[in-house]
Image (cartoon, rainbow, N blue to C red; front, side, top):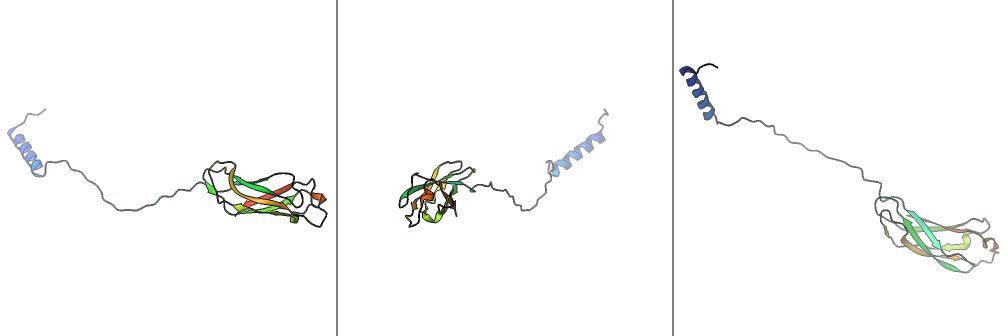
Length: 150
């Protein structure tokens, strides 16, 4: 290491004085800016399709009516509301005419929770109309209520 001379000491002192006079702090820099942006995400397919069911007692005969219970199963990950129900009748015997039956579906507009099974969503009546026609074809027929939600 070199020995400090009077000249070097004077230069060091002058440099220190200049640093103190110039603010004596460390220098820093930054940038300023403006901007905008957005973000997106896709929602899950919740609120979708539910499985609807109609149940009623067996043994329906011409001129009789039975109560119908409508339920729903929700296999999705979000709750959904069942809207207006629509019901129709079919049979497994072509000679047992669907026109001989009346079915109603009173809607409850029920909320069906995610993953729920058997939630009541409405009620109605199934009537086997008493016709002047021979209705023997319906004696062992399977009557099915088809239900949908609008």
